[in-house]
Length: 398
Image (tube, rainbow, N blue to C red):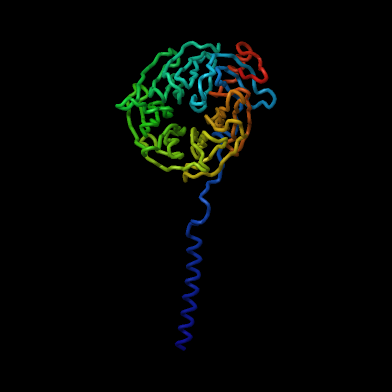
């Protein structure tokens, strides 16, 4: 009898353990499944795709062009020679220009066209004529222009000279100018600058100071300095549209760091795959992904900002001179467009990536080498094509 009771009790215990284990398995979150977040990015708050813009392209040899990126037969609409850039200027690939999200060039605006020898031209968008020349620096290297959220000011950063300055886009007067150099006279190399989405401060990577600086946009006063690890060399960066996260490209260790804004607390860091060198990136409109455009390959690396991991790599068309120089969002947030500088002999390319499918949507090969590409209102583009620019020329390399 006792044995029967013992056997019965043992059987009950075994059943209890079995049911308990099953219950725990059902309740315990899985830790063995992939952490990769499915890529599903709404193009904008509206499902309507925005194709109502052209591109204004400023080439490495001083030619302005109007491009319709959605035309499969006649994307090149017209051109004009704005400036003669010397053939002796080496490797003209280190300059860039950035407009705020959902902004486009309007007719009559003064546009700022940087050259990588420290010169910046102010060009009237109605006439495509140079109205003023700014000599920011005098050496070859990273230089670029970023427009304020209201498009009323531009910030310019010139790495070789260490100069950061803000200019009024209407009066073309310098609001303030500062030089960032070490006590020994060595430039801290501010080779990028971005406005925070509210326009209150600038974000500047000081490459040879291994720091990221927050600087008042109104007077140039340094608000905060975040020291990065020695030798990391932060040299490009981009805030998200929401204004609560900053991505920083590090050339010293081929990684992308993600920080909170405005307090600059590290959230995560991503090592680039396959020895890719990060150069420029952009957040998707909802901030869920960061698209990185390497400087040494025609690939776009997609990084999840929820777990800071690479979730996909998009292979772009191969070119004779591989490497991406710029990536930005189109108006409306339907696409990200990346620029392959190429070279003046073989040309370059503009590639549009659909943010709903994370795949190539349009390719615009150019026989010239693009330097700066910005969205242009279609009515402004039509006016330029009809009244200012010359008709398209096949094989344009001049």
